[in-house]
Structure formats: C-alpha cells, structure tokens
Image 1 (cartoon, rainbow, N blue to C red):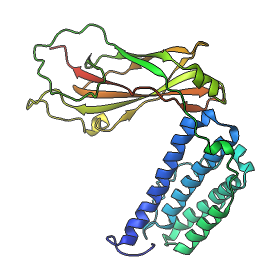
Image 2: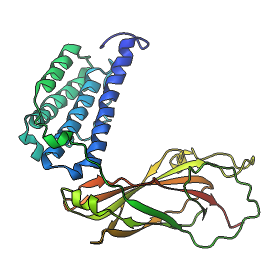
Image 3: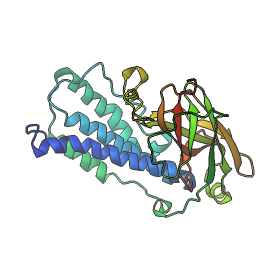
Length: 312
C-alpha cells in the first residue's frame, strides 16, 4: 500500500482510502443533521463520535500514506484541535481516545513529516485501525430505531417587480424539472419569499426545542441565454470567482410562530452577467443551543432565474 509507481494498484488504494473515510464522514454528518434532532442525547453523542473517528482516520491515513515529498509548511491543516470530540462526548472511551490521538499523535506525526518527509509504513496504520475497532461504543437502542420524519410543505416565490418585455425572446430552452423560472434584471437586487407551515408531528418528535427556521442558499450558473456569437460563455473568469461553481451563502433565518407558520424574506444580491441561474434552498432549524438541523420538504426548494439586461 505504501509503495509502487503512479500506475500501480497500490497507488490507487493509497489515494482512495482517505476519500473513502471522507465519504463515510459526510454520510454520518448527513444522518446527524437529519435525524439527530429526533433522538436522545446518547444517540447524538455516538453519531458525533463516528464523525470524529472518520475525520481522524481520513487525516491520519492522508499523512501516513502521502507521497515521499515534504509537506507544504505554509498550508496548515485546518483545525486539528477543533476536530476533536466535544467535551461532552469525552465521557465515552472512544471519544476520549480520539481526542488523545489527534492532539498527542497526529500533531507529532505532522511535525515529523514536515521536517524530513519520511514515509511511514503500513504496520503503524494497521495497529491504529485495530485499536479503534476494538474500542467499544455504547450504541443505544434508539440508534437502530427507524423513525419517519414528517416533511414540510414549503412555498417558494420571487418578488422581482414589473419588467419590460424584450423584443428578442428566442431563449435557449432549459430543463427546469418542473421548477418555476422567473425573469430578473441584471444588476438589480431581487427578493425571494419562503413561507410554509412546519407539521405539528415534526415539532412534537423533536428532542430539543427550536424557535428559528433557517435556509441555506446556493447559486449555480446553468448556461447562456442565446446562441449568438456575442453571447460567449465567459462565466469561468477568475475575476468573477468562477460562476460555473456553486456559490454558497450564509443561511437566512426567520422566527417560527407557535402555530408552526413562518415567512422568510431572502434578499439576493444583484447578478451582473446574463444567463440562466438556479437557486437551491436547504431548509433547516436552529434550536435553543444554536445547533442547526436539517428539515425535509415535500418538494425540492429551487427556482430558475433568467437574468437579462433590460436597459437596452
């Protein structure tokens, strides 16, 4: 696993092991954000420990099986201490072990690696894997309990005002997959309105009280408006941050009424360049401890924008 040329199978394994732990970590994070609100504290602690274990194994394998080159000292690993288990989870043996390994072992390995770039061998990795797998975790009965989470019926609309009608309306057709497509003037701000009712069953099954609804917004460029020669796709320019990549924004929030209703205005910044865009919203809630959880909806919360210059 630690040797071989770039085309050998061992090299592919060396690159895929950290990705596998990272994918497993993302799955645990998704389960925690979606189901953690409706289970007990012990179940949430075990899920956080599983997340921390996958994150530690990803970082440790990445350091152990890296190529025989010195690490970039200017590129520091993000949050070694912050990736440790919370203090409340250190009461479990696995949580305490992960904290000690990250602060006492991983930091020293990274320091030695940055000095001489020596490649560590597989036995140390196998011993660490065996130790973690043998460390028991007290999974509660609720961890394996399948629970149906009620979905919320949410409405998404756009407040863009009145726009003049364009002479040339020969747009390139785009598949909106049933979502609404609205016209937006380039260079002008617009507003989205998110409203709905949270089911009573959802609020009743929550283990922690919450009083805020949050929504995360993602803006994605989908394509150009016309097939003209002048309408070349220039959205990958570095000056605009690369609009071909999704742009994520800080979550918006609104107060939840006692009856379960809410109305959330979402102010959107102006989009300068013309083209088709897609805005996707992820609904969630924030409990009294400022922990954010995901909330499922009956339909995807997305809307398509036809951004065009109406000043001509």
